[in-house]
Length: 487
Ligand code: NAD
Image (cartoon, rainbow, N blue to C red; front, side, top):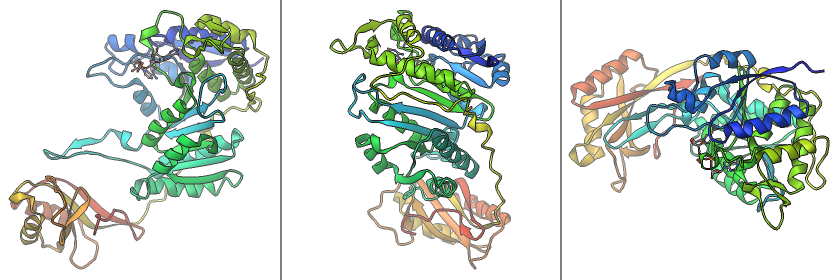
């Protein structure tokens, strides 16, 4: 007899309690050994004055069990509230989001009956760092941060996931033809790590054509590894392609906590009616069982669920009069799955999970150590808010050369929204009030911090409004900054 595994359960809001009750009933009937602690998340926690939707004592349970089985919650409208999922992901370092997207044709209508894709999304970095600034009247900025350890960890997780789940291919999507440094790093690390997994086919696609290909031929894809924003969008697209977002479960995985939940929300429109489909949360529960090493139970639940679907026992959201046998409510659906425990589907492909093979992968993938690079300061970009003289770049360029050049620094170029406008700009280029002015050393040598400070003093004395600077570094002799378009 397996020792019960401690897990934390949150019943959530809306349909949450109904589908959690049904899902836990199925898992336990199948023989899952769970030692359950319940915590309060969501609406009640928000209303009790906890702005992130989680009460302070819940953290102790999460730290103790390191596994959260979470029903959907209702996010309150209006300001002042923080997203609970973002808080949980970031504070507990859940860096990987795993979302299997499978078609169940002919039982669920889909244009892509052969689809079986797992989307693995980086969860902590990218534009989701939440570092945004308004810099001028016209221009706003959001920083896209991609780190080597962050990328290495998610990419290794993806390959390891593929190997353990007997997947044949891993595809990475980026836009590194444009974002050569950030997306370029992610792609480069993908190629590096792919070398360590010669048993798994690997490919990289530019995200735009890759998405088009995924939408038309999802059966050509297997495991996708994506940076955060692309992963967020693509995981919804992929789930929708299966025919129903409502059937999907997802896992958020990190070293300190793993969280399992349905893709859908709390469905307040049908809450309390007892008609919600518990499948998304149930499949998340299956992923949780695999994670905690109860794979045999996971397999039993998953196959019974497939058989239930096949037998035409369908909740209202997937019911089709000409096809379904029974319009089941939540509890009846759970009962039907329980009745089929031990059976396998006849038409759909049965699932097989390796016996007792815990997929607590996050703990075998350590945070990679990085070797500090030799860093040389070779220039600085000074960003200005400037809205004078008809925004003529030549006026600004000559003014900067007259008032700011000196002390070993000279203006190299000015760009506006990344396009070079001085020297030798095109008169047709539209200019905003946001100017990036690149200064480099006169002699091509490295520069010192104090030269930048004096440059800013000269800029301020010249009556120019600088809004930020970005230092230009070379790392181990390699350029660590992008060139302006046309530079
Ligand atoms: P939703 O997913 O709750 O509902 C969209 C539609 O799908 C509704 O018509 C609903 O009735 C239906 N639906 C969803 N799940 C279903 C199920 N299991 N069975 C049958 N029908 C189902 O999305 P929404 O209406 O945009 O959001 C409602 C609330 O959920 C919001 O407060 C939102 O912030 C929250 N939400 C929470 C999570 C989460 O906790 N992870 C995720 C998404 C949305």
